Length: 225
Image 1 (cartoon, rainbow, N blue to C red):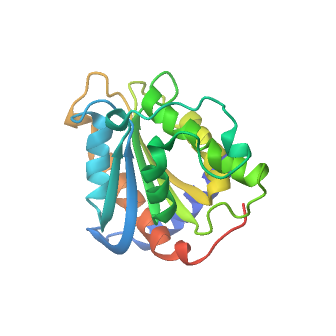
Image 2: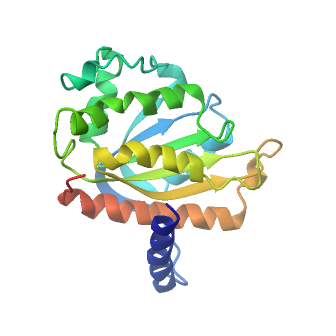
């Protein structure tokens, strides 16, 4: 995990050096991006982070709110070990959009070093893709490679998003997704917009540009995870 993130930072740093003095505006991209909100508050910091990040990208967005959808959790029924899909059809529309999109943006608060339970339910229901790969021997499970951006808000000033990122990489490895960037807003328990300092706004712009570059190009290729 540490080596992968270090390699990504080195690549981003090389791009940033080329952009010194260049102000990143709205990035044009003829792509469909899935956004997933994992927090309960529409006026919360993770939602504000999502608004600022997507505001830098000119694309078609399909949005899912984990709390509004309130999907059922995985029950380990093992249906997906015998055939593709899930025994519960409440997420069929979600899975269709997940497989068809060109990139995924997840915005969530950090609860006890993890995701809120409605968001965790979505992650756990991705077990169907793990089963398709390792029990049904489907390779690749999803042919088109897509980038993922993880946007987190955390009360702790030390939270760096690593545990949440590791949870996502566990399932994204088999769904041909690349966890490309992680932006964390810290110290949000008592903060308002002051949590979004100038240096964080610059990072949001830079990561949105990086995400857009990948979404525009890497979807033309595929991997065999």
